[in-house]
Amino acid sequence: MKIAVCVKQVPDSETRINLAAPAAELDQSGFTRVLNPYDAYAVEEAIKIKEAGAEIEVTAITIGPDTVKETLKKDCLAVGCDKAVIINDPALDGADESALATVLTAALGRDSYDLILFGIKAIDDDSGQIGIMVAEKMGLPHVSTITHLEMAEGSLTAHREIEGGKEVVTASLPAVLTCQKGLNEPRLPSLPNIMKAGMKPMETLTCADLGIEVPASLVEIKLYSPPPSRAECKLVEAEEPAAAAKELARLLHEEAKVI
Image (cartoon, rainbow, N blue to C red; front, side, top):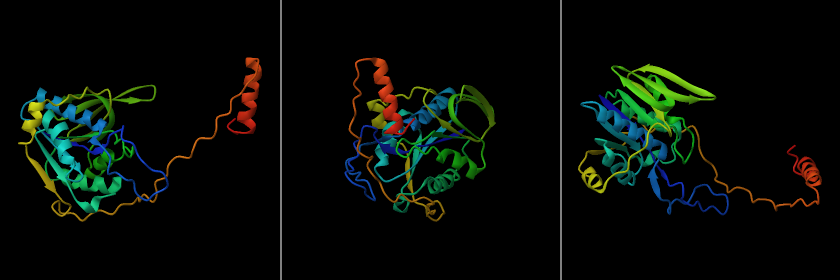
């Protein structure tokens, strides 16, 4: 059985974004980069499946520059993935979700994967589209936002949260799943395993190596703008709570115009 885990390196959620005025690009020189937190659940689930079965190979696949190698080494290979594939093509800088899904589809098509795992979304763009786009492009069944997974011979059963309840879905393999918090508890890599991870195969490819042209992006980011400054706070003062509530309601209706 072969499992692919598609991951992304993203800015750490604690990274400060300095944007004093609208700009066409963000200054990312000071960003600290980490494995996308939702992808960690996908990696952990792939490793759990590997540990529960025999002859299972797990491949981590990503799109990005050379800086992704350290993240792949520490957060994928050191916790149990067998090898990694990086699509490093400068022409993909700024590519949108549709273009990235096309490239990942080509990379995944190089091998016969029985299961393809994604995080539900990346915390930098928050789009949550690529996993489902890949499934559609590959013509595979997919289940999104799963919180529990059971594997069987040639099929799987996944639980996913829906509004007000839980949905249980059965799908045949191969299939694509997107994973979220609650599915498992991602493990931390040990120092010895991080050292050993450097010996595992890590392949770097371009779009040309995949036999495709760089796909055109349908979306272009024109401008980044800082949020507007907050207006000065107005304090409602009154001797009686009822009078304060009445004045607050008037201000919300007549000045703020939110009610």
